[in-house]
Length: 509
Image (tube, rainbow, N blue to C red):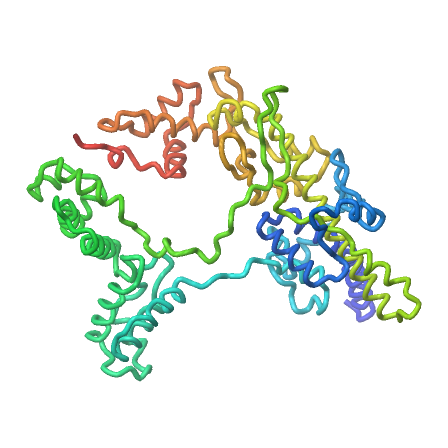
């Protein structure tokens, strides 16, 4: 390739990049806001209120004042059409192409979840908005270190304890053996360093930290630690906790496999004593670390509330009012543009602030209206679910909803992502209403995979626990209800529902 040809190629490439990126910031912001779950949207709006002088919140009782700024604030999007400042499905295709070309700048499946690459340039506030994620709380290790600092022990035990806590895993267990910890801590300069010190420190850590069962080397050890803590607080008058400790300490594998008759014979206990001890174990945790607050857990708030209106025999949806502030352009800031003593830099600053605030308000309005339009289709197509329950959930592909609303399927996907809906039947993730399915053989219409799982759960709940149904018998029971699926599919659904196999569901009487 000649130098001249290479130059022409590079020029065309740079020009094309400039054309693509010209559309990107506003489109990316619209997509980002549309996809954000409610807690993160609230956080994003709060950040914008703090950083943008042109954006303000309408205080309660200011309806008249808010109306007076209607010329400044963007109109609410028409609920019968898609509104992203005139951008169309063709622009979504451009955005998809942009995603494919520049995956190093942002992740294609999660707008707003990563920072732009350093080469993207500094100061682009729209690209910086993509980094809007929830602040992380303290890790499990940090929380345990806070507890350990309050424990009065000799210095060598204290330092060894901190070293042990560094190896805790997400479930609260010690993530390495003491030999490995000893070898990796040789250079720390801890007095009396060695396995005897680590053993003493571990014993003290296990007793001191809450909840009980933390820093164990196995589930078996964790459960025994929890039993010791319960007995110390409550005693063991009937001996059932002692029996539970025997089952866990000496018959753990058989206990996991629910071989209660074998345990009863070998432990020389009646089946009733074994059952009573097993019942006690329900108070214990297999993952003690999870009982501490998960620093990454998001508060689940409903984006949409669905209610039944008996007068019209319809289900109606509304946004969860009161959780999002009403936004508007600050009229005082916008009016400053007309000040005669304002220099060019000041005018440019105000113009940028007003533009950014307008973009945000547009995007929030778009999110609300797109979400409501999608939910209205769900209410119409899934009426039987709301009337009769999860067994009547129908297949609802996102492409069908997109075609119905005349929008790009990416809009529907991001509109339902991590959104929750409060219904008369409980709180559900909106994505649950979108799934594939199959036609029922009994003529009862299509059934979604989620509906089939609900029927499977219903069959298991109703089975005789002394003679639980095998996977093949579960498949036969589904077939009797007009849902013929293979046994291996039953196994897959059973595992997804957290239902153990028949031998582990069996109750010995």
